[in-house]
Picture 1: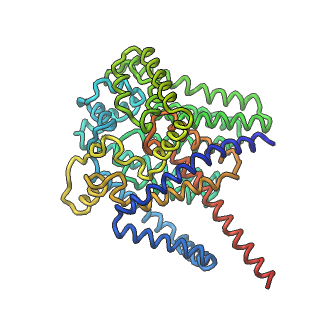
Picture 2: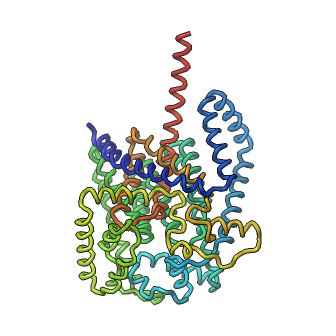
Picture 3: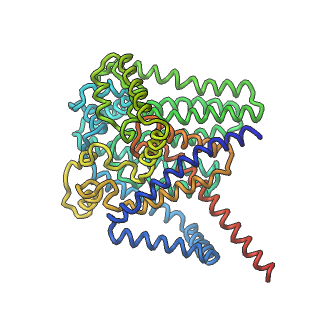
Length: 515
């Protein structure tokens, strides 16, 4: 058996377990959302289900109708594209203007620090140095914008979020079209657009959208490295990819999962075909480059005059592991307070190791298995990606002002009012249903063993495993992996359609032969 096939079997084993548990969790959430949904949302959902049933029952007529619609859209492609982008940007702009506000968690701490205002966690940037790159960028925006008020700065940063998301969508579509073809690129872009581009998360200036942006660029550049046969170009692209991975780590450390996936795939490729010493040298540089950039940046950042940074106070890896074992595996205030009290890093590290041992001993094998099952559901079941999970719900996002405009007031009531909850007052029903489809489509990629597809499988599985081992407990952490998830789902969806078409064709031919 070739190593590439063995690699696919191994990663499929983990992918199936993780995704099946996620599907169970996503389905369990549905009754709660349906109970809170408006009659209009339920009606739209019923119509969509009936449409799917019609397509399945009358496949021939559906294909004929689809071809007619497609021909009409192709003939008026520019008009539809302009309308699509105008409606998308208009909706995003309304969300940004309606929901721009403050929070009682990390985003507002960084924004306030960037603008030179006081913030409520004194040594925040000593504890969480991984937020320094975002702080420097927001401070740069603050200076360029002419030292605006917090409300104006927040809106500017949210508009940057808008640009990051829309640019990510275009990059993803373009890259996938060149790598997999038009069908997969369209389906993946649709999943991406529905799940995040038009999401209210655009109104929160935090590292999640930045991480997603860098994930998209690294995915696109990674695929370009695979497609490029010219050694010189491949070398420059790998240098760029290594630099991007270093920046990605400084935004979200969990994005190093992509680098691990690349190393594993590089090893598989080297064992399946002869790789020259030059290509091996490129791979070494690709790995070493982030290991140089990251410590250099951290060293320089620790001497900033913008905020106080004490390197020895930084939260250790063991802290996040210990927190990932407490209660639901998410943020644990008791653990944080314990770590804040101990200034000595080695003592703090030892305390966290002891906590890890205690919690694993308490759970035992079966208890830990059950814990991981529940945690995987918490990490991946919610298509709103942890909306109102941070800041004690109410403090998740508080608009700077309550609008009297009926449309804006409706948006605020839907997403941030006392009654909106974590499911947008039931308005997330359609998105939640699509999320289940996305997860199911991922399972349809199991037979695909190409390097390009396995890379996605390793990143998606690796990301989920990372969140199981470290702090998780909410699906907001999945945002950074959405380009990989939606691409994998797009491949799976096209696989399902092709299988369905082949079966219909086979059944028709059998019937003709019988007649």
